Image (spheres, rainbow, N blue to C red):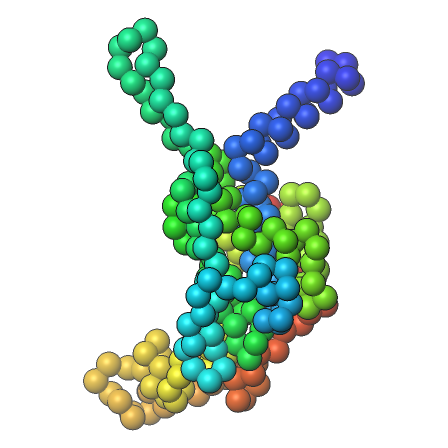
Length: 222
């Protein structure tokens, strides 16, 4: 195959993937890394004011951004009059939910009928596109080349959260660490200590979110 023909084939493949949502999915998942640590002010500067704000406690909020495309691209055909065949298009809606701890983004989730033909969460890309195209100074620099470090088919792992971001009560009574029927027992106390230690890794002893804004991520994914 000639060099020109190879380039044509490659370009056709890229255009096909773009049309089917592959790169939109990768952008949405990359945002789940890049937006960690950005301040509330920077988030609203590039994504706009949230559609809904839920206050969980004195230091933690949930921001929700909703998007509903005007068309999903679905259609149906009736070959030879034998019966209609439906072709599924893109998802019909996406809600981005962002947890903010001490006014910093600590995780980004997507929910809804939000997949495109190839990849997951591609419908959500317009919600974070402004931030990804023109990153704010408090966003992370995520490296890895055109095919890393995220996948189009799954979200990256959720970053560790501070204790105050995930629970409003004392660490010793965290549901995930307490032992049923042994409230106040040594096992529960030990579990609470472990939870506090884990929380300190994500923040300070008081639950303040500490984000390494200069961290870069490299690697390869699908």
